[in-house]
Image (cartoon, rainbow, N blue to C red; front, side, top):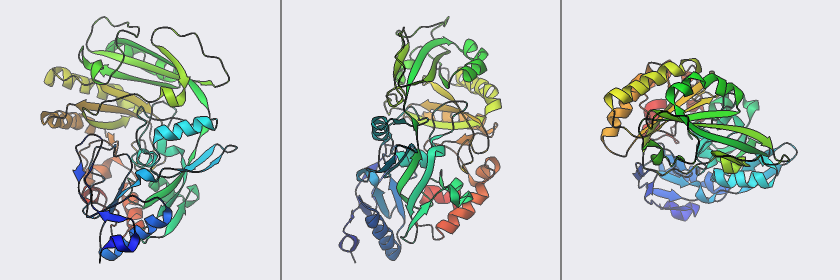
Amino acid sequence: MLSVDKTGVLQPGKLWWNWFGEQYFVPRYTARPTSEEEVCAIVREARKLGLPIRASGAGHSNPAIVPTPGIHIDFDDFNQVVAVDREKLQVTVRPGMRISALTKFLREQGMSLNNQGDIDRQAIIGALMTGTHGAGKKLPCLSAQLIGARIVTAEGELRDLSPADGELFKAFRTSIGMFGLVVSLTLQAVPSYNIYKRSWNTDTEDCLGHLHELLDANRTFWFFWLPRKESADLYELPGGVVPSKATRDFDICHMRTYNAVPVAEPAPELGPGEEFDHSSIIYPNDYIPNFREIEYAVPFGRFEECFADVRHMFQTKYPDAVYPVECRAVKGDDTYLSAYSERDGYALSISGPLEEWTWGMLRDADAILDRYDARPHWGKHHFMTPERLERIYPKYDAFKRLRREMDPDGVFLNDHLRMLFA
């Protein structure tokens, strides 16, 4: 009867919690597989026992996308490089590989990710499946770099997916683990590059007045709106070491531009607020998990109007709120559940402390964002409903049909996902 005797990898359930400590649970069984065969065996045993399965990477997501009463698969030990093609600039890795380890490996091979987010502690599969992104008007989210995957299906069989699978692959690329367990994934990289980074502070009016000029003139531009003097400290943003054109010490913006430089070119002479290093070094920042966050993307052309409403909300209803609001432009893609599906977007990340009152502030922000048909980052808190998703995602119903075809019995669902996608 005990599954541990049959698979050799199922163990009694162990307490799991995510990066922020907001999600935690004890499943019936925990597994830490290190091979494709073990993952297949786990799924087949789960079918015999009638148990659902959810997998985790680094546990960096905020919503309850991992908790399950059944089998929890921890991919942390399944994190190796499978293959690298230097000519095609492609790499195949196991799902548990952290972005930090991947970008270090790519650098050694003369490659870089085309773009990445400002945190690199996530497992690469978690970042892909939740639509994680970086910034850049002409740069799509990380899912667009996925060009192939091997999964274990709901029947416990191996299946390879690629762009040749058409609509299925488009839906799969941001599917939050609902189509199967990914045991390897192939990414399209680019030639290795360095980044010349500039940071400075300025008044909010100056930021918005030059917004499109900055977006067009730089590979990457994004900013943090700082409602209070002490806001920068909460995200460990540099203070006095960066130049400032601000005329006040609150309601200002911390600005950043990143521009790619071929690795063969010498480093420029650096001034205050400037950095120069490999892409794998410049992209990531350090964050303390001391905040509760939502992040939604509004249509690109409606960003300024939406930001003005969010700014007004903070200044009038939550004048003591301290946390920065992070704003990043992202290019549209063809992935079904990406926040940028079939449209360019502008992401707003809104945070507060890990306290009860923060939920009210986030819901007020959510009400504003909903007026602009904003779509969620699936790794951050959100307040979605099926009715809302149907309204804001043109491929929502098609995604659900494909999910049912891939997993008709809901093996890879949990309560949170079943409510939204069953």
